[in-house]
Amino acid sequence: MRTLSHNQFVAAKPHASLTTGEVIRMLRELKGWTQIELAEHSGISATNISLLENGKVDIGKKRAEQLAKAFDIHPAIIMFPEYEVAEIKKAA
Picture 1 (cartoon, one colour):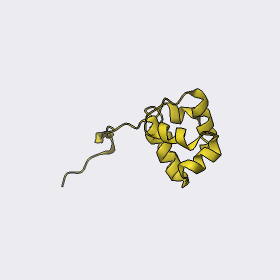
Picture 2 (tube, helix red, strand yellow; picture 1 turned 60 degrees about the vertical axis):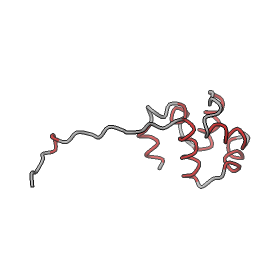
Picture 3 (spheres, helix red, strand yellow; picture 1 turned 30 degrees about the vertical axis):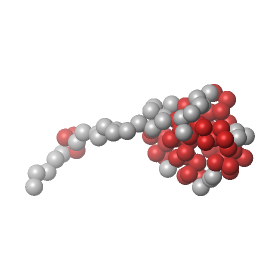
């Protein structure tokens, strides 16, 4: 068996990127919340939570801030998931 040194390893490239809706769903599920519970914590209706999670409506700054406050995270984690993968992984 061949042994590799530390500097010979190459970081794996991500195979899939997360959408904003997937991030919202993932964070909600990590909290163990239903859409109704997230609605109570964020002040966004459960209907709109569903629409956001399924990519039927755009997030917008105000909603991102409301959700971020509910999850106790920075809004960028929700609005720009492709740039905040490391932060999302920390939340998991």
